[in-house]
Image 1 (cartoon, rainbow, N blue to C red):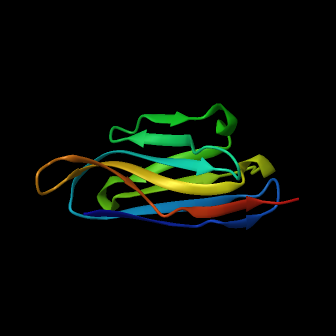
Image 2: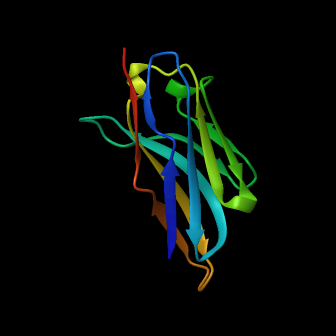
Length: 121
């Protein structure tokens, strides 16, 4: 099995910064894509950003120019640097990964437990 463990959430004022980390562990042969979703109160979970193995990135329009995703393939870890945070960025941030597991080389979609980000004024 593969597990994702997130860290780095917290409280911050508008304009502030936070850095999230997500480390994958377990029966990993290869990780194809890692990304971050967020879910605000009363809203559906949405894709914020993702990065593929060859480092092709995607950003939602609402975070372009403010958020940066990066990845350490050797450590099976993805990072999300969030700058100029806004109250609208508040929510639970979930790490997600498409993992080729090492036993049968099947692709699994794995989710982390989520970390709370609150931007308050």
